[in-house]
Image (cartoon, rainbow, N blue to C red; front, side, top):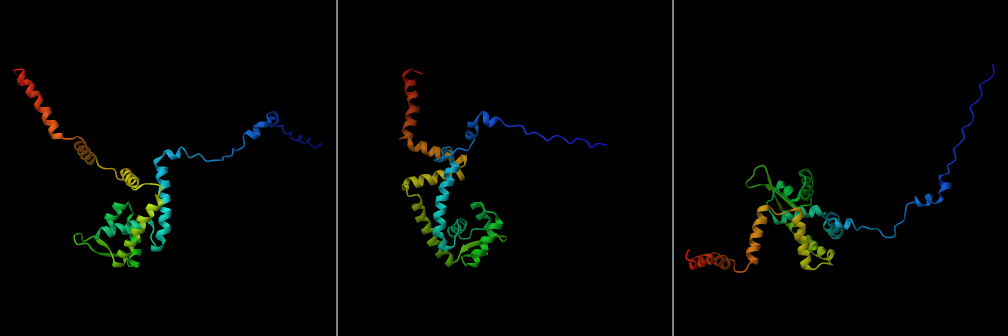
Amino acid sequence: MSPAPANPPATATPDHTAEANPASATEAEVASVDQVDTGYLETLIGYNARRAALTVIGLFLERMAVYGLRPVDFSVLSVIAHNPGVTSRQLCTCLGLQPPNLVIMLNQFEQRELVLRQPHPHDGRALALSLTPQGQALMAQAEETAARLEVDATAALTPAQRNTLKRLLKLIYAPPRKADKGDKGDKAQSTETPGPAISSTSAVRRPRASARRSGA
């Protein structure tokens, strides 16, 4: 019995695409960029706020290293310094912290003898937080350093521009309530209108005078 004939070898189909259009391969290559365009990102508040924050935080970390404080450590100790007797719950609400993370920080502060935890005078389930004399001395120096570094980090701004920037940023993360907006609007309107009592009185009396002359 004769063996079956072997299958003929497969013949590769030549690719004539590159030969037909030799420039297509070159055109498909990734283009190079001489200058990165971030124009769209710079139209976003979040991008600009983040870049500004990174600039300030970078200098903060450098100058706060001597005190052994991270930004969150500084914030917690600063709130305690200006609010003796504050509770952990109040701190978490104020700074947007998770309770387990705050407990770890407070334990570290106690080990460094910076914070005292004492029974709260009005809430038996809470502890009142305060700074030790060592903690007060540390924060007095740290807050002075923070004030100086922020001026250095925003050297391109005038004092008035810094205040405006802080006010506008606060409107984003802590917008006023509608009632507050109404009160401020009423105050602004009464302040900007000179002599509101005189104007309103004359506006009310004029129709009466004209009515008398017409014999009404």
